[in-house]
Length: 362
Ligand code: PMP
Image 1 (cartoon, rainbow, N blue to C red):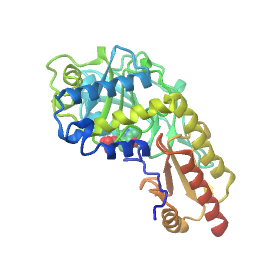
Image 2 (image 1 turned 45 degrees about the horizontal axis):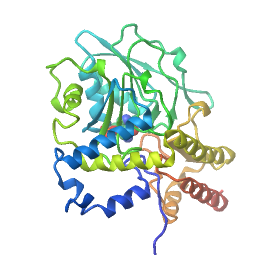
Image 3 (image 1 turned 90 degrees about the vertical axis):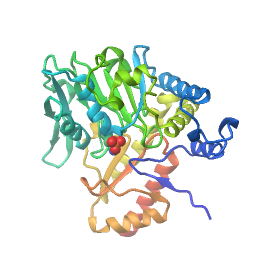
Image 4 (image 1 turned 45 degrees about the vertical axis):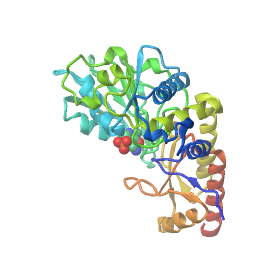
């Protein structure tokens, strides 16, 4: 018996079923090579072609201007927490970090190892317990900062903002949990980075999109695997790249193009998120405590009015094929991560289950 399951994990997250099926079909014998794509040299012609195609597809999807390098790196989001100050913060300079939740706070803690960091905590909580943030127009930024770092979608907190810092300094954005979920104007950023394991592919691959004037000077003392210049000059193959993850990311990019690209993703993601938030708001049994103006399309935390029912909720959800709904340990409650690969049917099934659970236990 096969049950349809929907995986709401925040990351590593579900990937499009079509992509997984294709990967399965070509797993042992990729493009008649007689072996798997993960068993061939990254310097072989077929792999270099795959790599270049994946980069071009990503460039098409995000409309990335020619003066930006697209780097396929190791080290995940946290690797970039180090890479950003190491590449961009010169001795004597300061950088601004906007703190909107758990991940931007972690980025601060890493950056402080390398230089002077000004932080600005934009989080607030109303008397009614609603969590919010102050709008970008009100952020106090340091004139001449080497860069301004922000995390437009906070995976743990379920907070998302689309406005950008108003600054002449380069904007560095951790888009790990929102990249490719809606159109963005890449030209407004200095650096965009994202761990792959949410909207791109499997973990182990990290994307960095870097405006070329921000590459560090030659021979700056940066660990080589985190050095943007080395990565750019070697087509992300200074060391062996995560080849299988790169391949899968390439399949995801092609899948995204077939779906209609990021504009279509935005439409779908908004409908999925509205369906879930609308139901939560209508119900007295469930709640979400994020200001409506800043609710994430990707990560939806919610709570049961009676928290003693949490374990029962999770166990029954799993029996219904609804996986990984347990909230992050810092927030508690539940969290449904609904990235690009989550079909509308997954959210509809979740809402039906929640209704039924409310009917029985409410
Ligand atoms: N930034 C954000 C926004 C994230 O969601 C995560 C992972 N959940 C990270 C950074 C850290 O990524 P990694 O585990 O790949 O280091």
